Structure formats: C-alpha cells, structure tokens
Length: 173
Image (cartoon, rainbow, N blue to C red; front, side, top):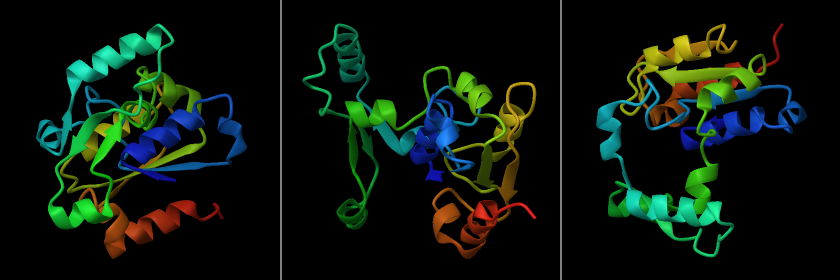
C-alpha cells in the first residue's frame, strides 16, 4: 500500500520484475506524473520543483555520476508544525524513485490485475475522475474506488478514508 508519491512508488514496484512478490497493491491517491491527467494545476502549489537542478542531475546520472543525488530537488509547502513531523523536501534519488517510471501508462499496463486505486472525491491535488479511464482496460485493469467526502490527506486520516483502505486490503470473499 502506498499513499500519494508512495502510491507512485508502489505502482513502479508492481510493474517491475519483482512485482509478483506481492499478491496485490493498493494505491491511495497515487502520484502518477506531473503531466498525467490526474494532476490538478492547483496541486502544483503544494510542491516546488527545482527544475534546473533536476535536469542537471538527470544528465549527470545519464553519465553515471550519482555523487550529488542527495541534493534536494523537491520542497513541500509545509507550515512549521508540519515540517517537524513530515518530510519537507526530497533529494534527487528519492524524488526520482518515489514515483512511477516516466512511462507511467506502461507501469499501469505492466501491473494490471494486481492493483486497486482509492482516491477521495474532494482530493485537492488530484482529479479523482481521471483515475478511472487510466486504469480501465485496455490500458490497465485496476478497479478505482472514489471515496465520497474525502480530500487528499483525508484518505489516510479521515475515518471514511481509513475504512476504505482497510476494505481494499481485505481478501475477496
């Protein structure tokens, strides 16, 4: 199970050669790609991307140079209280691996049959209605559950979101 960028990572793993290690993957409001139809423009205010540094580090990685992969490339809009409890920024290595591959649609196809998606209908960062078409055949085969009255973080904090996640983890009867 993975939430937000963790859901993107879970999709990436499900699509890998190791994907069969787990019977099922539950993606909670997964980040798929900054250009995916699920990404709302308003969600871009939540995270600031250091694009020049990201491009430079990707170029260096292409040359086999990974020495600076720890440098931050993504910063989240957190207040001081939240900064004490949450990760305020991601380094390049984490940011690049805590998401699906660039071809996220390929990851969806590769992982089909083992994935279930949950998203709140009031998600502030992602368009809940855009997940269904992406995960439907022929591109994928994953059920998408839209949880009424739940926002992005509410998917893991609100009772309705937690109950939906627990239900998604139960074995089929």
